[in-house]
Amino acid sequence: MVEFFTNVQNLLSLGVGVLVFATLMTLLSSFSGGAKLESRLKAVAVRREELKRRSRQAIAAQNSGPQNLRHSDDGFKKRVVERLNLTKLLEDPKVAEKMAQAGYRGPKPLTTFYFFRFSMPFVFLAIIAFYLFVFNDFGLPVMTRLTACMFAAVIGFYAPNIFLSNRISKRKTSIMQAFPDALDLLLICVEAGMSIEAAIQKVSQEIGGSSIDLAEELTLLSAELSYLPDRRMAYEGLAKRTNHPGVKSVATAMTQAETYGTPLGTALRTMAKENREMRLSAAEKKAAALPAKLTVPMILFFLPVLFIVILTPAIISIQDTMAAGAGGG
Image (cartoon, rainbow, N blue to C red; front, top):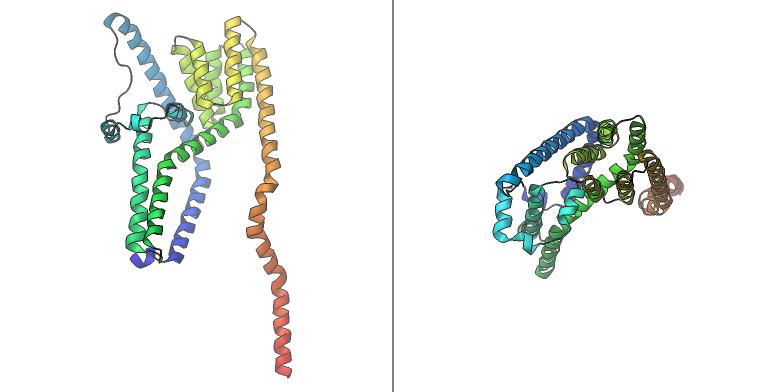
């Protein structure tokens, strides 16, 4: 085992195998969208029941005094975070908002984030130190190996933030790809005479095939519209969870429509058109950046193969001619 992990060729083969496995899992995950949709809608239904319970408890609290309505997290990670006071040591004023944008709600994901942000530097440091000082030092001096260990610790410190940023970016992309279609469906439902809560609930069920994240957000918006004391808070919550200008403009327009009595259908039609234009401009931007992004892959992968295909027959012909001339001489 030591010889296997100290061989660079074996490590490269292992890395290629991991990348191939990740690619296959990514391709296969696209076929499990229905199961994910059902599980997320079930989670949102649980959230709706939680909002109902909190509403009832809030009404009861008016007579019995204040009480704690927040779920508590009593796991191992919670105890570590509290004993080390990581919320103060690693305080980030926007971490709760980022967790909501990534689709993680409640106190448990926040505790998990602080726990991994504290532990991952030590984990990365221990792995690299154990490998470089026990398995294979690659002939590097001690100072270089210590520098590599410190660099691994820095990577471990920023790894949770990188994971969270990637999750937010993927979720935002999924939402915005289906958001204009959801607005069109919402417009049809509203003009058909449905209430805004029923229309949002219906659209959340229909849009799940295009974007599970958007279906989850719309279902949560419908629940918050029903149970929050101010409907404006529900629209603002949707804008904060998505953090996209298109959704923010729609939330503002719907709030103004309900506040001032302006026609909701006109606002939805205008917002749907603007979001379609935003989606089209984003696609055009990606298409314009594609040639520059393909330059490096073409240099690394296409040109060497092209040179081999062109030059190999000529080299073989030259070798055959030289061999024939040497045999004739």
